[in-house]
Image 1 (cartoon, rainbow, N blue to C red):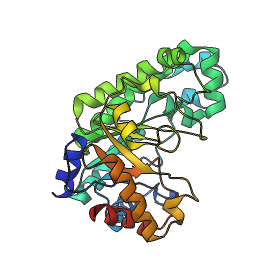
Image 2 (image 1 turned 135 degrees about the vertical axis):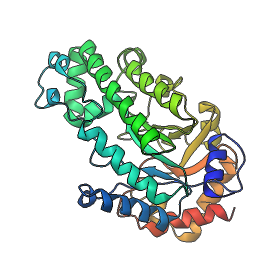
Image 3 (image 1 turned 120 degrees about the horizontal axis):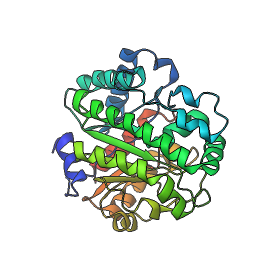
Image 4 (image 1 turned 90 degrees about the vertical axis):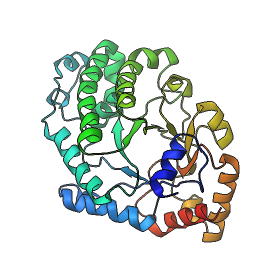
Length: 318
């Protein structure tokens, strides 16, 4: 199997010659304003680590640039939010930059692009305290804002897949910590805009993954995402479900994870031999069908790329 064949098979839940590996790091800020250098950085990191596929970064484009969110103080102001539109630099910039990376990869591997859920884009702009203030003050206003953002996210998704040439989307959802919202609140206030985007994503490609992000070591209320379907689930093993077989049964599809991404853990401190034993243990749990080896979330940039390559090479020996 080549890399594309291996990863497509894994996304379909089929047995692979060896378990594919994909981990990712953020692109440092000094590369953000030069698309050529940004693309070169991502491609170089992919080649240095030799991972089986690439999760493309959205660095620089995390915060939603709606004027109505600047200096917002009350929930009623959310009704002023307007769509950015397909030609906005926030959308066009991501498409054009991604196109450069895809062209540089020349079809060698599967490429997924990071897209946040609508409320996550809003939160990245205004911060967690303001997000919680606004949604508690007027859930309907927050739902309106998320619906507007979702319209634009769909334009971005279409451009990333159909124009830039990405194979699919890495859809990041957050905010489901057990102490943040009740099940009913999340499903009523947040799920509609998330499912709207996710359903659209799945209409364009079958090569999508959902990332169930975990924050502050607080478990997620996974039940709120039970009907969020993609080919692959990237989950936080060390916060939510540690047993890989249990995760496969829970999500009912291919799962992606294994290593704790936090500094001080095995990925950062173990010897090469110890890392290989960790990889053997995870693959023994996950098997060679329906499992992709990765980490709970992004790897800190101070981790040498060589250590990710050690994991890749270990997986190929098993």
